[in-house]
Amino acid sequence: MNICHEGPSFTPDFSPSVLPFSHMNEDYQPELEVIMRLANDRKVLSGASIDEDAKLHVLCIASSGETALSILSREEVAHVDAVDLHPWQAHMSELRRTALLHLSRDDQLRLFAMDPSIPRRGDEEHRKELYRSIRAHLPQETREKWDERIDKEIAFGLGHTGQSEIINHDIQEALSMANFDPLHHADPSSLARDSDFLECFKKVYCYDNFRKRFANLHINTQAMEEMIHRHLEVLSRTNLHENYFFHYYYTNYHIDKEIGLPLYLQEQAQEKIKLLGASSDRLTIHIGDVTKVAPQLFADRNKLYDVIAISNILDWIPESSAPEFVEVFYPLLSEGGMLIVRHETKPKSYFAALAKRTSFHFDPDFNKHLFSKERSLLIRDTVAFIKRTEPAVPLVTSNQLE
Ligand SMILES: C[S@@+](CC[C@H](N)C(=O)[O-])C[C@H]1O[C@@H](n2cnc3c(N)ncnc32)[C@H](O)[C@@H]1O
Image 1: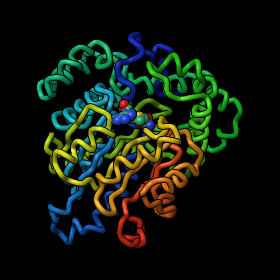
Image 2: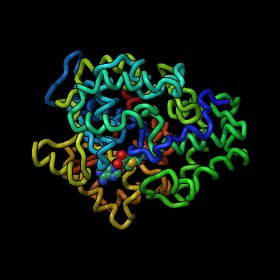
Image 3: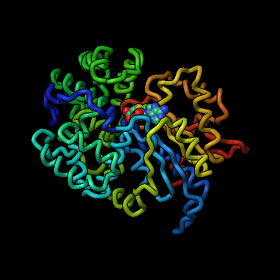
Image 4: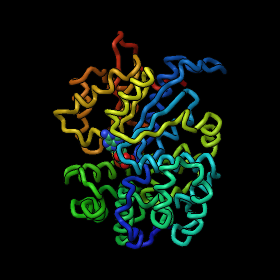
């Protein structure tokens, strides 16, 4: 039985939440890999000294703030812009940043109801207390928004309320009822061939359930099938217990307080982030459409980006307009700079074919390496489109650099 099994009551009574995503179901490791690669090219670090002018400028989708915060742990990064169309995702990112700066690591886990030793149910007052202890540090608009939700998402546990997270709970519920526990299974890969296991996913990843769970549903039945496929694919990986998505998805908590945590929540990374800076002069959070905000930021500052990561937005862009969409970012990148894209629902060949219809360079070997870093249970491909106007230099991976 899962440690967190709470039955159907895990759905908050104010569902759907104002928040689409409590967590980022995307791995920050590909972003860090690209950052390492570019920093090495540009010799940001030489010996013990850092060339401040060569440090990297990054733009990413904010979502719940987790990737942006993990990126801040790298000293090679000068500044991160995190952008989101959805105001509540920006408010979530602000809250995570403020929690990191003003609470101990364990209190951050407790505020978001992600500490496995403190069951979510019963800790409502403590979560509200923790929120009250940091609210003065939030920007005014964000503070006013979360103040309105103190008896809702904050009391319920922000790590569990996102519309997307409720789907996780539906899976948990279906698996618990059918007596499946992937985390403690001797051979999780065999579950991918178990028709009863598959049935649990089919029950949850279906149109009727998604309609109920999401305020705005963008995906179709075929996309839901692709998502099931990816779940089963990940179960066959060898290093599952180092995959914090696997822990979280099947237990609802960050069950191990080191490898079971995303980087920004690991003690050492937290110290590094605080040392390097996580206030608004190193991480700026913006509300708006990234295709408008990114060109505007470039125009205002006249500073090119080295890395732009646009989540899996391309899942929602029709194939016919995808090249035009991607081209928006080309003039905003420095030479050799990379646009990181993901998808959850397309065929595996999609990005290679798309790149051919754009100005970007596509390196299949580097992209294969990049995707090997992606531990997410939802993402089917992660690649970098490279801005290259000068003759090619072979790309090396971090493994080759060691
Ligand atoms: C693309 S969604 C995907 C979620 C992701 N796969 C996950 O589960 O972590 C991530 C975020 O992108 C934001 N988003 C979607 N389209 C956007 C756009 N054009 N500009 C800025 N943000 C956008 C959404 O509001 C959401 O917070």
